[in-house]
Image 1 (cartoon, rainbow, N blue to C red):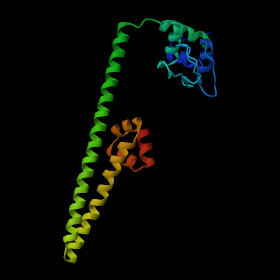
Image 2 (image 1 turned 90 degrees about the vertical axis):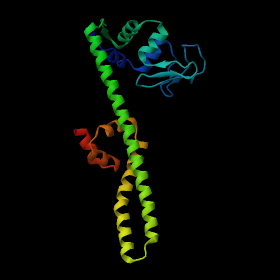
Image 3 (image 1 turned 135 degrees about the vertical axis):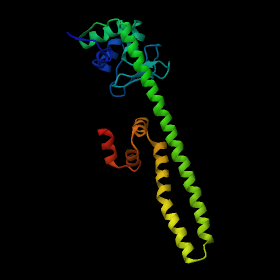
Image 4 (image 1 turned 120 degrees about the horizontal axis):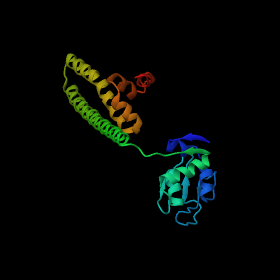
Length: 218
């Protein structure tokens, strides 16, 4: 058997139908649902699972990944669950105790990741407020210019009012599109948007594929 140290890698080597069958579940690969043996339920659609290894019982509320499932069914610790998965996968796992230095480094990496996540969140909130406020401002100006247009009496006044409205219209459109983009975008897109340059943000807002390529290359 080949040696393998990474817990997720070991767990990922075991297909969910194989794992469920080994743990005593009645596997239905078509529906990916079955009765939950955690609480002895009889509802054959209560327990659901995915090929990625996630599972949840909609009756008792338990859920998690492959390792959590093994621990819950076999009432074992993390190492025991990993050894069970390793046996099913045909690999040898030898978990070891992390050193104090490794623990500290992992803690630092986690703190850095959390701080970065908060900075991205704050930037997304700031950008959403920025586009919303600029949109409202442009709308107020457009209303004011419309009133000015109605008050115009001479051709020169009409032309000047129309010219100002024409200059403002693209700005209003941009902030409307930006605010709508920030309200509709999924989490991963919002992260990329927060980290992008102004040029890349504009390209993303208007769906320019070149903007996506620039982000991938950055």
